[in-house]
Length: 131
Image (cartoon, rainbow, N blue to C red):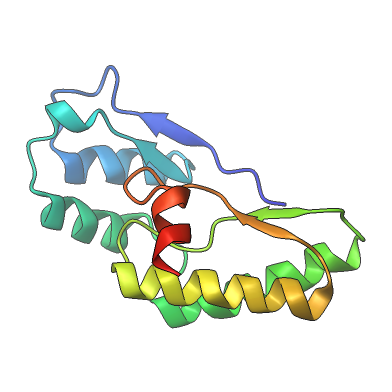
């Protein structure tokens, strides 16, 4: 399991989003926590900036490879359940659904139940209904 530490935009409201993301990435934060109503950038700009500045795996294919490796590692610990992030807000609906299907296949292959850690813009219930 990897603990991800996020930094809120609280107290950084005057910074443009790109400078905020660069600042928190340089400080070692893994993610951002953004108050959506105060966001000045479009959703497309926000996704692009996150993908450029904070992304560990930049493509769905890289994310899938990482997911498979980390799932296998977690399964070796004999857990009763694995909760994992199976996508990103910067990926499309179809890309996120493909990653969730891969997580279900990994679950069957390793014999460990899996759930998806919810991403703020794509709740788990919507993912489940789309399968």
